Length: 298
Length: 298
Image (spheres, rainbow over the protein chains, first blue to last red):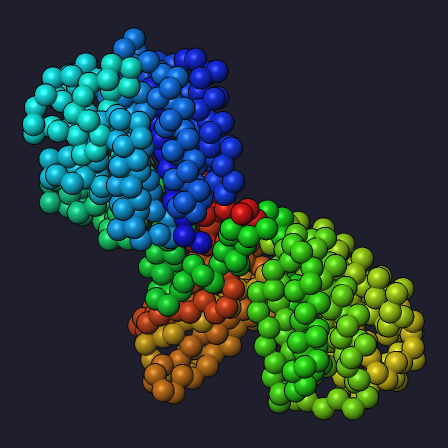
């Protein structure tokens, strides 16, 4: 079933009454499943995730954004997480849905925000329309506090909506991005330098796999180190290739892999690749999965 | 979602009007998904598979069996596939459902057949109540043609229903069995003896894995041989262990694996094991699969 996941982040993590009112907007739309939501009072931010067919997800996010904008006042917001708006980010994630269609959905959503809510919108990641805007870090540089000046700079004209600073709302960042797979691999050593060396070998910026971001971490309680990775396009840079590369790099130094962790949600397509690769089952398709016939059906 | 798959085989593969009427019974029950059905005129037999929550599947199979018994006359049945009844087998297969509960479901179903349809029922596989009845081959020995005599033998008293020979219907065989995984591994050699040797090494009867059945086959067009296996309990004898054992056995003779095939439906749990094993992701759960949240939901 063609599905889209969306994970809006709102700049409210303390007043749980407001959070509930915002989350209720997702609950109110038929055909959308609320997967999870959580609030962090230090960040003063809540993360809501939902999934469903593209149109109902669009509708649920429309209601969510409208409600959040009406209830959250950024002019007095404090929190330790970077943010630029009352609704800080709205990333749409294609699940069994073409990436280009998901980007188009994000654009349609941003356009709606600009026209109906009259709030400035920046597109980032795969929805970015300007090369400098792919990175959320760059788009959000200086955060909410710098937004008023940023909006006066023609180079930072918003992608949708007015180039006007609205103190209560700030700007809304809308993205389309491929589902990310978080893969951590623990090594049977406490040599942090080795983990860092391996992270550098496999990650894109140092010459490794194009869609891998990686760092070395010390796991002091376990007396181990970890190569902690984000695979940002598991189709083009598959999990098994990365796993085997880390294993080989560690083996060069006589170090074994103790275990790995896949953190958080994993798309079925990523599992399919693991089957295909390790079992050499080149023709295997996740359509063979019995449970897949029950998706989107009741 | 707790699901049960059921794959009734009926002794009609030529009169497709009858087959449609029988299949329609599955279509008529809400909460059951008809996965597939196919008819083989040589076998004069049709295989229907459906899935859903246990109660709706029970209801669909109840209607299917009643209709098939009313339409199919075994007294003039000819076909090349072994069979003992108008409805020859009704195997229930647990998917995310306890095996013991699935066996209980099969028993309840057989009881219903005996009481309502007054047809003799044999339980086999995990639903068998007598040690000699686990094997369908043994239960069906002599087939329909030997059934009249068999029913006179107290050792072959049916598990449910009357010990009476009903020429139009024969007996119905009801089972509960774990989902089977069909794994074929192609070797880079045309040495059939090697494939047979490896099949013997890994299969249960010769001292191999408890839940593996295997034979060696020649693939003449590919100039390869194949170790063709059924894994009858993928939880207790997991795919990756079998894959690696075949690979190691072949390597002992300097032979590589070219590819493998997973034939037909594969339970999600079997994929989970492949992830856990090869990625050393010991804590990975298929509950992390994004699409799993959409199962049984619309």
